[in-house]
Image (tube, rainbow, N blue to C red; front, side):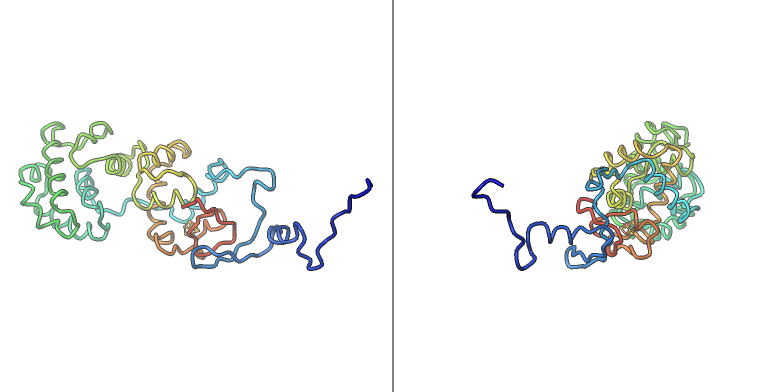
Length: 278
Ligand code: SF4
């Protein structure tokens, strides 16, 4: 050893370089982390990067796993809005914006009894519909949309709701979300993924997208999911959002997706938390 160089000695306190780090990252150790004000029990598996394999939340085997678990959880998932025709589904979906399906299902039997056909709706002034749909909120705009859509269906499509995306998008009050619901649920066409508030929240929690704009989220989901699953996936995630993965305090301890979910706002976790997964 060259003269004048003294090797570093471990500190007497035992807190020498590396000691803390190694203890904190010990694979398999059960750790208590703090996120916001809540503490979660976390099985501290070493991060994927540390094992030399970058974590890919949209890897095909992870997606397959998510889809299989959703199939087991919600095999019969479908649209919760009551309807007996494509037109009734258009109306119910327009009314469901910023409202609950339960609330819409209370209103629609009344209006469909009063106005049984699309022609009956087309003959209305929006103001006439307002009192009947008031409880769904935003009733002035929704009345305009429903009556406007009815007039368009009658004048341009012979009274039949079109089954093409570009044609559906010409109806007042119908954007991609409503068009996807109608195409997927009534016409059984997988033209897109319905991105409502649940799909928006849960696809971010599951790290299937990092986007916040519904159009971009839909594009991301369409790129990674098999097309024949688009409609079913939407319904399953919507059901999951109602039953377990609720916006505030999701029921992670009861969730069958728990050990493959790294969401930042989990209420319970056995895997590491990813702070960007939200
Ligand atoms: S573990 Fe929690 S946050 Fe993740 S999907 Fe399940 S309920 Fe949602």
